[in-house]
Image 1 (tube, helix red, strand yellow):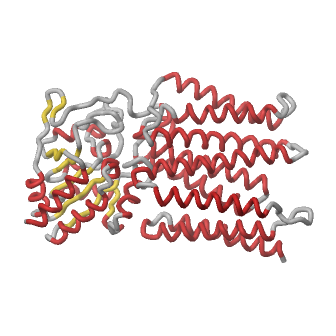
Image 2: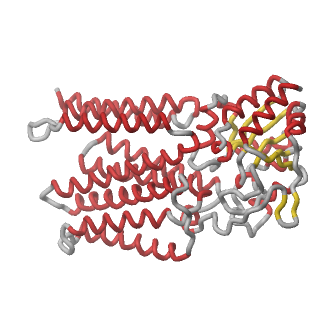
Image 3: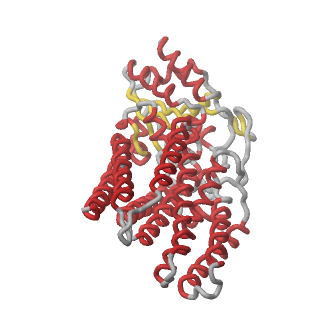
Length: 463
């Protein structure tokens, strides 16, 4: 009976993972899908604790298991409750790294607890260890870079060193699986050390503009490592969850690369961010941007028929999502149609802007993908660029020498007029100047995004 209930819990858990993942593809159902998948995981864990048997004995160590679960739950809940939306990418990287670390630890524990080391078993152990370790150390570096604790380091040396280290990892995995006596048990620790170092060097040179792709790729690594853990334990629900995370992360990585019109290899070895240039307020070299005032911008928006807001990381930094929603509602009271143009790689993680606006209760139908908005731009009266930079840079289409040339962007310059909210003329995370600032249709509204939006809201109310 116990075995039957265990298999039922695994079956239900696997089904909830699939259903939850499907619901995550729709913003208005994502929260519910996440809860359904979490319920399935909880049921699978409970079923394992209560009904799993080996050699006629239960799982054991119940007190330690529940103590660890309790501590982890409390820490995770406290971190999730305290995190700011600006720090959400960091939290995603941190939690993903913890998943990779768990997968690596599973491989270490299983290697020491099995007396018989067949090639298939060893291959699974070493692959799980290598991928999990790379995911852990890489995610920690991504966390540090996103949090401003680690600076980008650009050098062609990384390309050569990382390629050699990757070959070493493959060689160690092959030796460990098919010639385990060559290094003995030391091979496990050698592979762990090399993999951890590779994860650090792999992410270190990648610039912030490419970080959404890196986070997605590391997430897929964690899923694959977890799937190897499912093989080791012959656990179907762990295997299913790992495969789903790994495949979904891989697909998302490909989609993100497509959104940037770059190959994954180009993202890894051709990082954005080198050679950043800074500009003062209103001018760069002999180019002068036209400034506008809050009053003039408010009049333009209030008497427009259609306004498009393009959010970016600057909106998150200013924590201005709620103020932006208030501005949107005031415009709608004036009869103005307001939509949001969301670029796939805006922000520092996949879907960052969608999550940010959802927190402010912006209706999901108003969030439009860039490929859907671009054909409609000529009918937009005013575009408000709030904190976005590289994703609205016309150099992506008209400057073959630009690092972002060929990257699909939001064509805000095709609208009747554009207002760019920025603190200064400094370039974005890609480290290149944005020619949109000097476009004849563009006017700059300098200042903190939250303060500017708040002032705009007040001005619109008074009209």
